[in-house]
Image 1 (cartoon, rainbow, N blue to C red):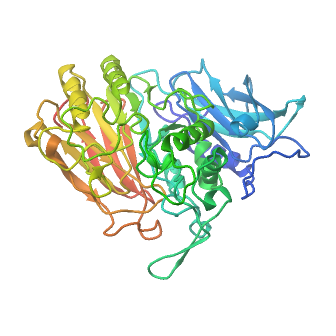
Image 2: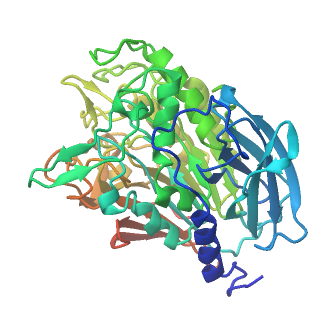
Image 3: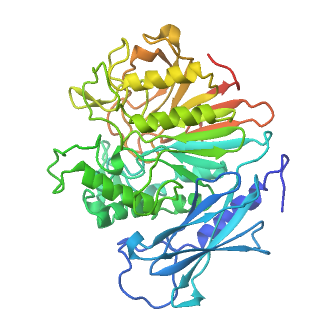
Length: 524
């Protein structure tokens, strides 16, 4: 196996192998109908493969079949698959939209793992389809191995879908070429409330063309429509090629269901016959759990999205769910708010797991920003901040409790990453600028969108003393990806020094902003 300095897998061989594996995939039929009817031939996995929630010794592998099939995964140290290890996975059927996940364990730390998925006829295991190959790196066991990952969010939003004239979701190819250890998707993987039409006329008269499907022609209400919305993105060659090379850590946000939804909400939206957000969110969560490999979720939608993914001694990733447990959106002026945006149980979990973490860096993956004022209508607010720069009120009370805990328990190395607002920025929070002062300074970095409309910057709330040394946002609402470059963030952790470098990048890879953070230090 080819090695680079530092023990990494040869980058050229990896990129070549991923490209070959992707080339074997045939683009699924654009109708993307569930394979209910009998078909001749062997099972096929035209939707590609994904790896998720990879740790030092484990990972999850996802696939979708075009008919009932038994999932089998083979892993090996090389592309030749000599001395391969086999893993028998689940029987894929209509109950999970023909998707399935196989759990791998006992893997060697810090190694490139090659895998391939075979789909076998349930009645004749000797009849298998063409294998679909992928690869990923397990997290390092030692302290001195470098770590790189990317984050972003917001895909197929505001009617901007897969545009064949632009080469589809080409930002995924930009990220793939940088060969990260994993990708953190911070939410809005789909826009269930945003239909995709064949054409959109841009302000300058140009025509934006979309790949379309039946399910994406309307808002998602049924389980089949939610499944179709998740399946839509996998029509893109760039995304399937990316998934075959880069494992994911995935969370969700509002557009997996409906803009700005919260538990107990009844939608005021004439496009919907089903108005109950709880019913819609349950259907969406089931489809979400079927289409992403997530360790804490079952394919029936039971379990939870929030979790911690351990990536060796340098990094723990704390994945939050700011959607499923929140209280109703409001003006946010309550002096007592125990539910907040996380819910009481998730807050207890986060405080406990942060205190237990021995990782040098503790990345908190937040599906919503902290100090950016995100409105919901004329009087209510969608995120944590509510525009009052004074003492914490409403959901800010829960954040204050968490920040106080981080300070008093002497937890170092916390960095917040988010998307949501459809632009990119950096915020530094410091008590000397804040109304609430019982916390240590920290950074929050915003990236996105991946392929959605760009929006103007929102205001900062002074409660936790944010300063904004970098901001890049459009000057009007819903600029298309053809007008505004899309964004992703990159984190590099140096194994020798422990330094963490944040780079905010735009489509094409251009660096917009860089910040270097030192391990074990507060107030940077």
